[in-house]
Image (tube, rainbow, N blue to C red; front, side, top):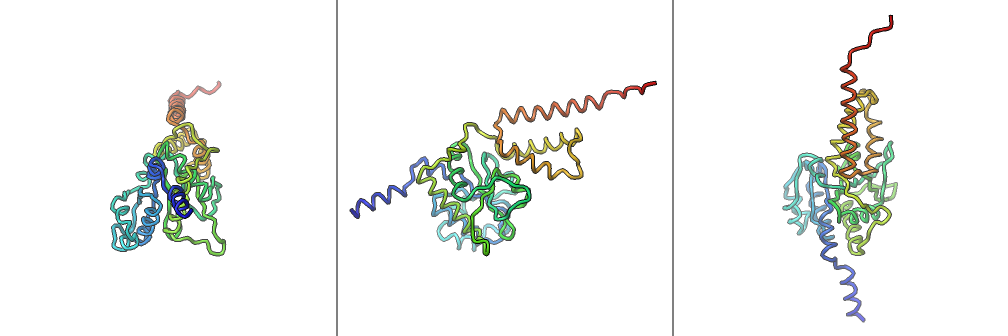
Length: 272
């Protein structure tokens, strides 16, 4: 009986080659991390759960001896980590972006708890790379960074003391991802049957959309942010594929052309 229990335990915790590969398509993206020890702790948290894809955006101190010390055997994660000069670079190729946040926003965004987020991330990793964003130790993600996300991830904690260390937050999400991988869990209610464009194409679209709305005088250039935030939320929910994006960009281009043609017409003479 003991031998069978041990065998069952091993089978429950061993990942298939496919599941292990899907975990590597989930990027942990640390943004502007201040303390190098937190980078090391995040690397350790990832490695014990079978994750290796660490990306950093402008870390304050890296490489650093304290990061290596806190990694405690996960040095290889640090050695192969990718450091980016911008978030745009870190998100290249990612069809799903989930951002961790403990704060409620004035403009509501889709929110998932850690378990649902991990299930969604693992389910979509078969189709495209997925990014989990972790913000700065002091104040997390900025509003602009959150607008790059398709949903926010909230780790429910005691409201009286809800502050999680960065490494702890990474550990919770990494654990939930491994549980999803072991169970081969899907997210059938939100399974995709299309391939959404990545975050960089979405950003180019938002720039084009904002400029077009200014050109046709629909958007007040003095106060563009609220409307653009709502439009980002709308299109982030829709997650258009390449054909749909081509249509949207074509509509914007045609709108701008029509506006230019109208502006170039001579003024009609006033009635006598």
